[in-house]
Structures are given as structure tokens and as C-alpha cells.
Image (cartoon, rainbow, N blue to C red; front, side, top):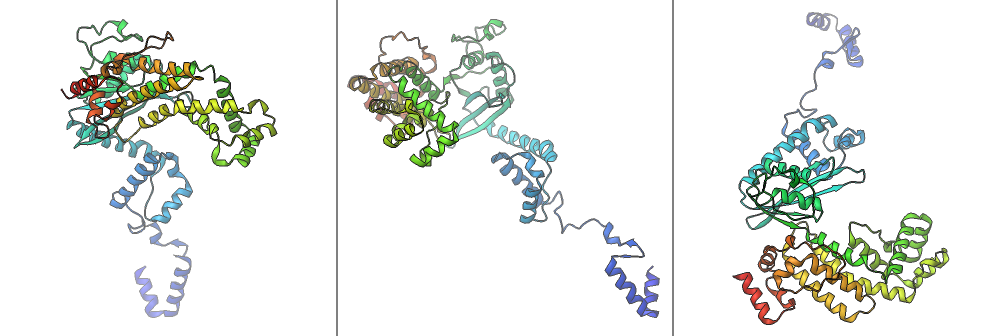
Length: 474
């Protein structure tokens, strides 16, 4: 072939020009494809699989977009998303969904787990939080987080997040939590475990914690019960169980709202108004036109009492003249708020406001909140005492809140030397074992934001306050 081309070029120059012109125009000779069409594209067109740039972009794509932004994995196969990536870097080859699911994510999980193992090896004291919740599709999940201090700074990590199928008994929760603890070699390092107040959670922790004199082979010990019994730790765990403060505070408010008979009519109107706003598109458009789009009444959630507070607060702050006029024009006269209703609503919001502030304060994700529990409890005690003197309409409601507060946190109030009220006979179940730890007093004293300033809110005498200070420092 080469000899023929040389012969044509030297002897038959015109024919050679015609041949080259044909090759360039058709890309082939005599119906044959050029050899370049069979060659693999060079590295200059696409990054190779081992190229550092390719690896880095793939890692950033999965870790930042799919993991941290919680975008669906199927997005990597979307043609528009791939076109977008091609515009950013035409040499980058994004992975497919199968590669991300079965290769990249498992490798990243193993690498992160190994990194956490090395991190935990250098720790001596940690605390855990554990919770189980169910999503809207009735799928249950178990979440466990670990908390410690590294070089004086708070350090938190997600220890486990896994599907929790089946019944939520204390037996199964204890087994799952024990597996997480043992897998991460944390059994001897755990000092506190924080959970909610559910009976199955309390039962699971009593199974994992304490006395060596009990027989763990006794099957009756694994039965769910509300009794606080000490059971030998299966995994050798020796730590202290602390109930979630925010959840306990929510139970106090629920106890109070349960006996709020005097304002039942007002709260019922608020609930119905919120339902209409969120369920009727016609009423909502009229509502927004009259009162403004930024003043929508929020819905309430049974598991978040402060959502009820925000609902009541929103309605109490609305222009009542415009609201009542709107309700009459839309044939909702039964929801019209009278002057007495508004007065009761505003007073109710005033009583619940300190509880809402305390709930928000103790739900911080990146800050220590245990140190504010003692100041909050003393402050709430004093506020309710003052409300009890000044209020006549809600005296029974305030009395119920105060009784429940002293009952559910009786262990901590006992440490503070605050005398409880006489039993109200309402049947609330106190959990002193959950709040009788000295760690609450120590945390408040060691936090520069509180130190011993909260002692001034103590209802005792000067001698009692000084004795409490000496108890903590001594």
C-alpha cells in the first residue's frame, strides 16, 4: 500500500491528488474505514479511571451531593445532570448508579468506619444518644450518636443509622445497641447514655447497665416493664442512663394541657382555624390577601408540643379585627374570637412562653446543653410560682404544670434541696432515677455562661444556697 502511494505520487501526480482528496472527503479508501476510527481515544479526551482528577471529582460528587445534600443516587444517570457535569469538565466521566451503590458508597463507608475506629482508640470517656423513630412510610430506624471532648472542644459523630424492623421491645433495642457498642470497642469508655422516656428504651438500658448480682439468663429480665431494676450488663457496660431533658419537659407541658378545661373552646378554635388554612385553597388565598402571606397559622404536631405553642402565639398576634371580619365573610362565624377568647389566648401564650424558650434552648445540635438544665428548672419553678399568685383564670393549669415539673424532675429538685408540692393525685409518673445524677449540678457550675449565678434563683435561704455551693465544690 505504501509503495503504491509512493508510485502514484512520483509518476501519476494528478491521480495521487484525486486519491488524497477522496480520502479526506470520505474518510476512507475504496469503502474501507480509516485505521484511526478503530483506535481508542487518547487520554487527552477523557480522564482515565486512575487519574487523580477523576478520582477527586468522583469523591466530591458522591460525598457532597449524594451524601451531604441527600440527593437521590439515580441523579448520576440523569442525562441533564451528566450534560451539566460535561460543561464543567468535559474530561470527567461521572460514575453510574450501580457503581455508586455497590462500589463507591461501601468503600467510603468502610474508610470512614476505619477512621472512626482510630479516633475512638484515643478517647477515654464518651457519651451516647440513642433514638428510634418511624418515617411516614412506617419504616423504623435506629440512630446512635457518640459525643466526647477532644482538646477541649465538643466532638460528635454518627455511630450508627440502620433500619430497625420488627417490634420495638426492650430486648431487641438492647441487642441492637449492644452490637453497635461492641463493634466500635466503646463498652469500657461509655459514661452516659441519653434516650427518651419510653418504657422500652428505659428497659433496654437497664438490661445493658449495672449490677453483677443479677442473672442475665433469667428470661423475665428481658420483658418490657416500667420498673427500674438493675441488671448485669451483657457487654460489660458500666454507665449512667439519663432521660432526654427536652422530652421530659414536653411531657410536663402535655400533663398541663391535658387538664386545660377552661380554655378548651379557645384552643379548639385555633386548631380548626389552622386546619382550614392548610386544607382549603380558597380560604387560604382569601386569608393571605387579608392578613398577609407571612402570617400563616402553623399546623400542630402531637410529638412537638412547641408547635402547638407557635400556633397559639401566631393567632394571638394577628389583627383580630381583620381575622374576625374574614371569618364572618367566609361563613365561619363559629370560629370568631371574642374579646374574652383573645384575653385567655394571650395569657395562655404568656404562661407557655418560658417552656417554649427552654425547649429551644435545650435542642442545640452543636453546643453543650446539659449545663442549662439546672438554671432552667429553677427559673421555671420561680416563674410558675409567680404566675400562680397573679393568675386566676389558669390557676388550675399552672398548678398542674408546677406539680408535674416537680414530679418528673423530682430527682434533680431533691439534689437542689427544693421541697416538692403535695401530691396532686393526677397520676403522673415520676422518674427520679433519670434526674438524680450530680452531673447536672457539675455541668452548670463548670459552664462559664452559668457558673453559680443560677443559685440566686434557688428558693431556699442564704444558708441553704451556701450549703449547695459547698456541696458542688466539695
